[in-house]
Image (cartoon, rainbow, N blue to C red; front, side, top):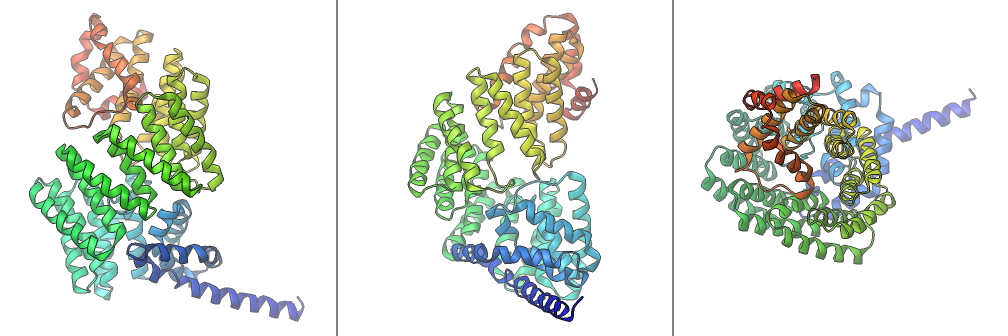
Amino acid sequence: MPRIALVSTRKREIIRGRHFSYFAQFAAPTQADILGPHHHQAMADLDVDYHNIRAAFAYANGKAELADMRMGLAAALPYYWKIRGYVTEGFTWLQAGLADEHWLSLSTRARLYVVLLNENNHFHWNIFITDVAKNAHWLAVAETLIEPTLAQGDKQAAAQLMLAVGGSYEYSGQLQKAAEYAQRSQQTFQTIGDVRGMSFAHNLLIWLTFKQGDVEAAQSMQEEQIRRRQLSGASWGLCEAYFMQVEFAKNMADRSRGIHSLKQLVALAEQEDRTWFVSNAYYDFEKFDAHGAIELAEALLDRQRQKGPSVMLGVALYQLGRMYLNRQQFERAQDLLDEALALWPRLNERPELSRLPWTLIVRGQVAYFRGDLQKALACFGESIERFATSIYAFHAARPFTFRGYVHLSQNNLDGAVDDFCQCLQEVAKGLHTFKWLINRALAGIGEAAQRRGTLRLAALLLATVSSAEAKKLEEAPPALFSEISDFDHIMARIPAYRQDPVFAAAWQEGEKLSLDEAIALALTS
């Protein structure tokens, strides 16, 4: 190689190395601002230079000497990734960090596991993309890192790790362990004067207080937390606080409190462009007050139309279309959903943020209820394909279920059973139980068995579902039309089916089966 080329290559390498070093340290100071009153400026700063951050990641990939700085950068970006829809990209870099774990410092390893565990935390990422076994492994490793990280003197990373571990235990139902870690985390944050960290730990303690049955204490703690968040201007934290108030109201069946908290949540989330909070709030709002939710969504849509194409406009179109479907106003739903389907590609949304597969599900349901079965099958099929290439693959359980009911309506029993079984298999991949989907898939398989004359299998599955539905009837909010219509038709036929002696003889046995036993039976029959 000519000498001038060697000099040029070396110079380029020095420049790229300096570029990496600068941007590896660029994001860390903005992380706190993303969650606070300077949210818009922090996001704008990262937006301007995100192509440089990407280049920094690419340059450092595979370089052992840069692994620690690279993963330190990754650990500073999770909230930015979530808000902007770079979750798949972010998790690619985080997974690379796991592969390079032996190159990382103790503090960086601790921060890496904080981010990984927080994806299943109710009040952080809340995206639920890993399977049970992987999450259990991460939890076990994270616990072993706490004491060494403390001993090394990095109280910040140790406190974050305690909180992430506590959140994981809360999600798995181990409330006492969760409370111990949350309390210890809060105390550790307090020793270093980290007010935001203390607030996150306090959130978890409030939720645990509520789940352990002390509703009055939890409410009092939460109201004080909201006052603090309002004074601090921490908009993300305040959205979380309102979201928790909604969860309280749902658990207490307190409609007026739920509506009040949801109105506060959607107003703040729209103002701060928090589309995730807006989208999830409307699901709850519809169950508290369908008419009020539609009025609010119509007003949101009017405001967003005036601003022009945006993710928030797409969310408004999708949510309002979904609500019109549940009011059985199919033509109005179709118009809005078609508009949303045309909008999403124009926004160049990343696959993990995109509502396109979700919009396809609802558009497929509209087509189904309007009698356009081919359109319904096409929409559900495309949704399944899009989920398959995303980190949310197990969400394909929904379109598999709905497509199964289309096949059932055509008396395509093989196609229906295949789709219902796919639903059950997809649900098993996620940390969510999605019991309503399990029940609908099992009922669909039971109905197919009934039509085939396999009456014992039909009775076992339908009895299990009937028993499971009866147990949750009092505690669950009313089901939406789009979730319940076909299922209700099947369940309404059961009294007639029980007139058959073979079916009746197996019914009591089916009532004693657990859902897991019924799933295993359905998948092996």
